[in-house]
Image 1 (spheres, one colour):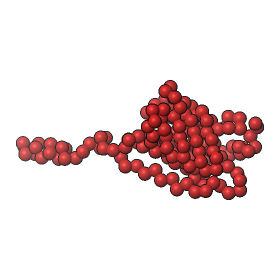
Image 2 (tube, one colour):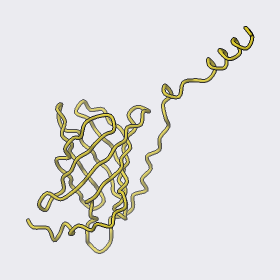
Image 3 (cartoon, rainbow, N blue to C red):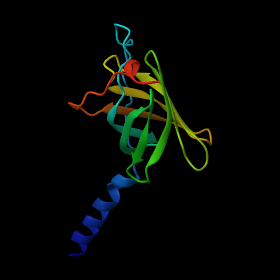
Length: 152
């Protein structure tokens, strides 16, 4: 019996705990050129996001909508309360967001895929620490008015 207990204890000691191991995540976006035809992609909708925070996955939901003729929204990480996405700027396939926090704005700079349904980039916290992030737009049948047609 002592041999069985010793064997089981040895086996558990040899297997590292999954929660303490960093996860190797890939954040390859494959962003192409901006959409053709001059029409900017419509970012309106719900997006799932994943961020690599030092080997620990952090994920949640981002909702983007129109506020007048500009974009705004909210970001809800799984582990914290929702926060406001104060500004979203899209220039070609480059995207910039400022997310409000008590310590100061958290910034996202990245690229948008040619279809406008995936964004990859870097989140930079007010402390200067940066982490990779990827977001993917959920499919939806709702079609909001294009940004160019929104009231100014």
